[in-house]
Amino acid sequence: MDSPEYAFGVFKKHREAAGFSTLRHRSVLELGPGDSFLSALYARSFGAARTWLVDVGRLASDDITVFAEAEKMLLALGLPVPGVASTPSVSAAIERLGAVYLTEGLASLRTIPDEAVDFLFSQAVLEHVRLADFPKLVNEMRRVLKPNGVASHQIDFRDHLQNGLNNLRFSERIWESQFMARSGFYTNRLTWPTMGKLFQEAGFSVETYSLEQWADGLPTRQSSMAVPFKNMRREELMTMSVHAVIRPSL
Image (cartoon, rainbow, N blue to C red):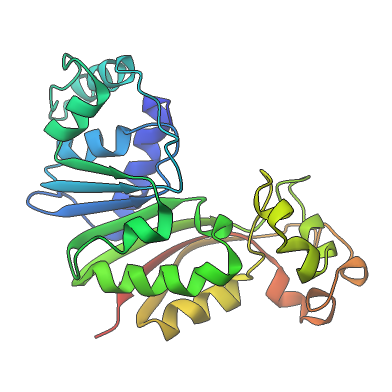
């Protein structure tokens, strides 16, 4: 996300999927901003009054030059330029953008007021949330979203070993160990049907904006998977990635 073009493409995709042509007077929440604060810059360019960036640690770069590159790109696109590239530090820039950077994951999310967020999004983040924490996170998303708020999530169900489903070979005891959780390849192994059900149980309506399945069948033999994946219906494992738009149910 430290590439201005890539970060803008991600922000644009989620904003359009959520149906916001403008964010004027609205508030934005990004889960897992990663290594840059560029989402705050783009949110302000589209008129956002406030942006929360929530991560599980201080991962974003303090390189102010990234804002200069991004503002040059906005100018070329004919979009409003917030004008923070000349600020003395990244912390001063995000303050001018009306943004707050929170770095304690679920604990940070709990500090955001009820029904404070209009637009919430994440890019390849939800699959990394610890299995035990996932329902808690979804409940917090439901709490902070306004009744007419919208959330857009790109979710990647591939493993981070060989972009297959090799993560499903491990027993839950091993996979959910602290060693695995601290690794760079942990995913919670929730399938899309299960994840979608958890959204609904938390009070969301779920729209599948786009969905990609494994083109040539499962990349890992189901017979080699651990329980419960070995015994699942094949269709439950066929989703490779999904872009879901969720809204509080009326």
